[in-house]
Amino acid sequence: MRRALRDSSTLLIVCAVAAAALLPACRAREQREQAVRISQRAAADIALARDTTIVSARVAAGATLASLLRAQGLAVDEVAEIVAKTASVFDARKVRATHPYRIERALDGALRKFEYEIDADRFLLVTHVQGAELNAGVMPIPKTRSLDVVRGRIDRSAPSLVTAMDAAGETIELTLALAEIFGGEIDFNTELQPGDQFRLAVEKQYRADHTFGGYGSILAAEFVNNGRRVRAVRFTPEHGAPGYFDERGGSMKRFFLASPLKFQPVVTSGFSRARLHPILREVRAHLGVDYRAPIGAPVVAVTDGVVVTAGASGGSGRMVHLRHSNGFETEYLHLSAIAVRAGQHVHQGELIGRVGMTGLATGPHLDYRLKKNGIFINPIAAHRAMPPADPVPASEMAPFASARDRALAALGPATAAVDAVTRTANPLGAEPRSMNAATESNPVER
Image (spheres, rainbow, N blue to C red):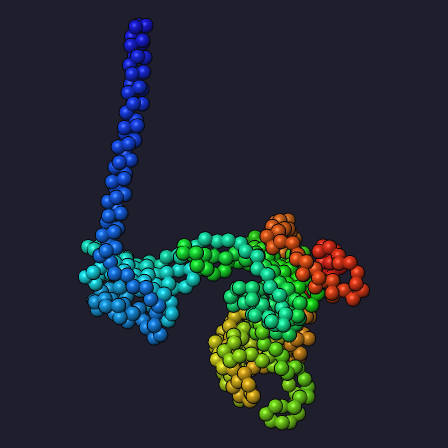
């Protein structure tokens, strides 16, 4: 019995030694086979590349999906097949001028791959393998993300939010996003001052080739306006939509936006019961506020409402009239284009038209009017009395405080230049207080 056990143990040892000796040889064989497969794939890819014509271009004005494919020499029946195949995943009528596309074709002209960039996040992909059917789908554009801090300053060389953001190396999309966050607190058309500063922590997206791929969410933002510091952080309440709140959890969103124009234009004529009309040359009431702005500038609804009328209205030119809750109504005059229709429900910040000079107007501008219970009131004076939206629920203040602290940490400490702005606003020349003390003693107006 003992001899049998010794023989078995010896056999196991021999097998183990043999296996150990064979393992390097097996691994070497696997590596050689893998290298051969890689070489074969590489050779196939090279052969395919040699047998492929690639064209990268942008959609011409007035082109359709069918016309741009035909312009690249694809056969009529193949074009028809591609258009039919893509119909289930993409509306070919939404092909837009200047958007990039890329076509790969075999030397015989047959399509191998077609890519069209739908927007900053998606592209249409059509592939055709020889002997198989066309495949079409809408794919996400691969991107990496990073969190960056952007800073800017209002001064003589950059007197508007647009120019200040441009000087910071950013685009109009970020300007609009920042204006939307603080639109209930700051009228960027009338209240900017030299020395005002802003900073924001924003997610930036980059494509595989390292080109900029657009902005993500703004995590936190700060604006110092005429010595008043306003901060906002992004937070998503449970079962709610993401929103921006101040450090105490109050909503940054007011019942009304400060202005139906997001930035840059200035007030050229205020609310008045007796003003000399620039065209009729007679004294009459001016029941709104005139904002100078370029033709085509977007005009948005200052709050949720329903379109009462949208169309030509005599001397008011093209006009949109909205009805809101609590007895409020707004009117937007002299538009060049209207983007809504009577009876339509619109949301705060939604495009309703574009600036123009229709009707009795000496130049491009927007005449914005506000009614309360049927009586015209001064929109600028009324704005500060507008209540904010709902704050963070009391039951969610703990997770909000945690999210707020993380967001403000990403934003970073206040810069010396920002502190200097706060000091110059103190007429007594006292030492600046801490951020928390300043917030407690001079809360954001509501």
